[in-house]
Image (cartoon, rainbow, N blue to C red):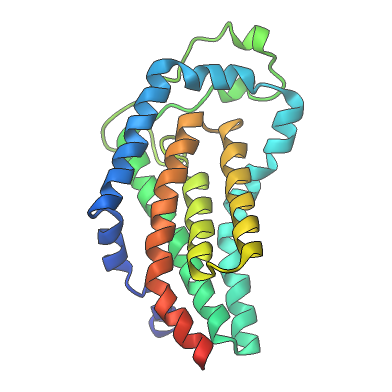
Amino acid sequence: MIKIMAPLLKGLIKNIITIFKGLNLLWHLLAIILTIAIVASGLDWSYYLATRNPILLLIAFPAVMLGGTLPLLAPVIVLIVGLVMKWARLTTTAWALGQAAILGALISGTYKAFTGRIPPPLSRMFGTPPSSASLLIDSSHGFQFGWFNGGVFWGWPSTHTAIAFAMAVCLIMLYPKNKKAFFFALLYAFYVGLGVSVTIHWFSEFVAGAIIGSVIGVVVGKSFRTSLNKASQE
């Protein structure tokens, strides 16, 4: 089993270090700074009030399910097809997407465990018009800093968004000349990110997740690109 899973773990430790190294660390800092600005300006709360529209929520909610299931299913499906068809290029893509998803979950989950961000008022998430939502107390400033004070499911940054952007950007890095891959990858990432920003997450959590996930995607994509090029020559 370990031997079979070895490609998934290729360069894992090195990639984790790279994600927090040099200029990449500045992107994490930017995610933090933008979050502070969005929260302090009241934009998170204003965005929450403006998006309590039943139709918008109906359109957006599938993003929660898609962002939770596709990262699990897509790498497995791509891997199976690659193994059955004996396409080394496709199996390499599957391992890369799998690692991007794992790191997206691991890194965002670690941030969440420390920040303890309180989620939007979910009890009134659906069908709450701005007039009644405005009666709620602004809870967008709620952080519970510490370790596991707020768990790792809710909070900052959005794991759905981080994983979606990590996988999308990873795919783009692997196939930079494929315009269809570029379009559909970003369409998926933004749909998931914006979808959860009007359902289970604050807007700032989408922004931070997109930035952090993109960094992960670039690093993982670059690390697997050499293997992908070798697979193409086989």
